[in-house]
Length: 132
Image (tube, rainbow, N blue to C red):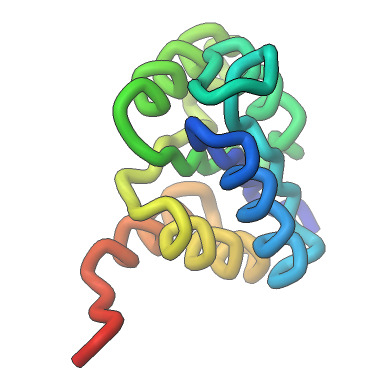
């Protein structure tokens, strides 16, 4: 079954790598690509690295991109702009908390949902109370 892929973008390569590991354990069938850090594996983000991750994660059903803050959003947008036009429409950035959103997204992707449903699940995580 084709599934939506996920790309994790964090300024910290260690955070995105660790989150990828967690998500891959939760839903091993979903392609999750770590695009954290710069091209030199330092703190920051890279549009080229994100673009390559999106291309790797896209198995034909689209890609949800989860970002942490600031320039990760800008570089994710630039990465999408660098994709082929037909692929651009299959890629969406989730306005969601990185960890909670990514976990919700990978679960929905694992159920075979469409990219907009995966992104919506990630964004819904913004409203989740941890303590009542």
